[in-house]
Image 1 (cartoon, one colour):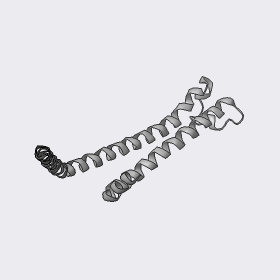
Image 2 (cartoon, one colour; image 1 turned 60 degrees about the vertical axis):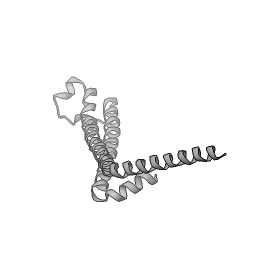
Image 3 (cartoon, one colour; image 1 turned 180 degrees about the vertical axis):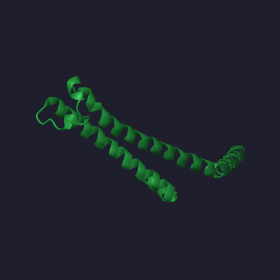
Length: 130
């Protein structure tokens, strides 16, 4: 019985030592971990801003693929003036979808980026509460 108690005691002591070492490691690494966390989210939101701008630009330029060659010699925005024309409807739909999606990415990423830069501790709390 004494041998079992001694073995369990040694096992518990080793477990406590490992837990203390792990706790110290986590405490030492926490600043670097937080820095990497913030850097990652800042980069992800910058990518979201670039993606939003790219979607807006594509939404502006893509409808020109549906314009016939005879229409291109007029004004670049000629397809916006042709009501009832199928090409104009396709152009409007693509323009609206891409621009709305682009602005959604853009504004959401700008909001998150400002939130991270202005109140990083609140961002951290809100991120882990979700």
